[in-house]
Length: 356
Image 1: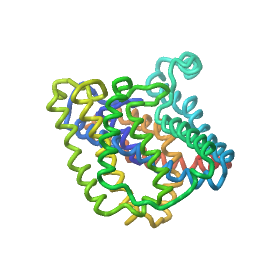
Image 2: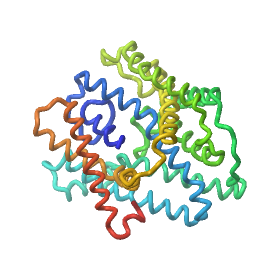
Image 3: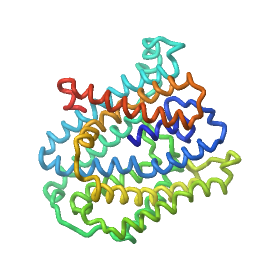
Image 4: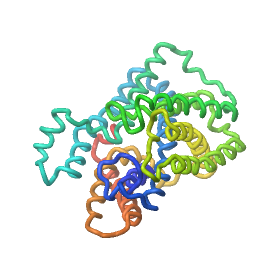
């Protein structure tokens, strides 16, 4: 659900890249500022959390299936939706958002898609990246053999280790963004964010191997939770002090104060938020109920199909002269409902659950 609200936020004023934007982004408003803070905080942790959770369940699956069946299943679960998004969902959504009044769908495919003038990866970049990571993991396991499979409980990393990781990954991200500022990268992969993503993928594997999640100390969660909360205003204040309100926005990358603050700000938010969410799940959300189980089963499909749903509702809302904040709330809610219902219908198709 969060990814739907995140992308809808960009449609209604938050900084970022999205298929269709329904506001004048040249104007700075209270709504755009608040939504940008919201998306910045989300960006700092939620995709990294997806990589962490995805990798956490990989070793058990690999052990159960073996290398051949494991990689085959991942090619089906990740590769087929990725190709379908790039050549069906992505192009049709882009055409409907921007070209439906100027070109037929056939012309659009001929000019933009089959020529590879545009590559419509969109949010499916996550599937692409995860597929690469899975291939790397499988290669590693084949090289290391049984030694990589040994499980042994080890204590959860200490606060100084977490601090060193945050500072180290912030520095690496700052350097990477000299070459690939946020928002840029080949094949839809924004390499400026990938130091954190790759680290969390590795941490997810280690968390399974060393049984870290049940061992997370409450004190560690409390400390890093407060670190994250206190760090949230650091980025907007830093941007304002360096001229953001006058149009100086250089946080995406380069040798400048804004890029430095942003690169080091993200991992502190990320560690705190992920620890809070893991603790929350342990204490309150680990017991399943029919609704939660149903939503969990449909979450992957919702992620894949949500762009055209958001775009459709955004276009529909252009018929109403309402404040962007109201439209954001309505489009978010309607898109969440429609995505889950559509996912349930799609997954009811015979054979679909093998992929979705």
